[in-house]
Length: 392
Image (cartoon, rainbow, N blue to C red):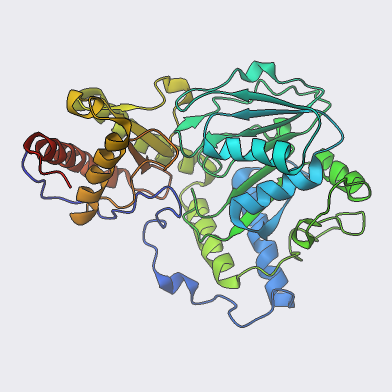
């Protein structure tokens, strides 16, 4: 096929850090409190505005706490695991790389004595109905590396005895969540909001706060200072929201505020969800007729609308050894980057060979539409290279 002429207006389809919101420029950071203390009155006010805007956009229930912590989503999730787990058995669900990492934390690092593991391969979900309401539950809302999401939260008991701990980083702000089923939720701004990396956010239900306070006096393992939100046995009012344990970048805070203001200006969470779903719909329509690509998540009910993972189904590709399949898929991604049509869309290193295209709310649907002919062109170009023995 001939090389397309129209390119996406923004070719940033990385799954993290993700594309900035439409119309973004560095000028939006001009009012950042650079050179100022985050403990100043102005700094605390900016952090309070940030937590209030996140709360409003997400529609958090009254009594839920939200605040900025160190280490991106990884830091936020490990903070949750280290400070909340211990008193009860734990049911852990994993179907891709990051969920597997949380199991390793519980088993190898915290050495919890009672861990039940429910696992499945890329593209599928384990049986979530196996969750025991008396146990703590740890799971990933949306598998960033697999393109598989949890379709709903009905499998988490409303009257559960344990806590539910959710890594929601690539799903929150793009999917509906019933927070009454969740006790600890973690994410970072770098995904659906298109913010900067390095900072995490943690949401705690009143039940999670109580557990953290109870655990602070009896934690069976050492807690790094960065994890000690309830250092004196209580998570004080404002301690999480505007008086952080670590020192946040007020430049990054300003970027997150800009993203949240944009989200509110277009209609809040419903609009963000609609934008992401529209992007997925374009790729679903294209994949149905392109003849060479299919979704890693075959079941549409569990298909992510943000981190869209594709496998390559043509004969020339499937006949290659596994190591060469990854090389071939990466060549397709490289050809697209060389043309300025798509950047950073290779599959995650531990995932099956293929492509991964971010379709979160900051991506314009018109850019996904402009991308699809380029995907076809790059696939055909690499297929010819392999047929001619010139692929490199």
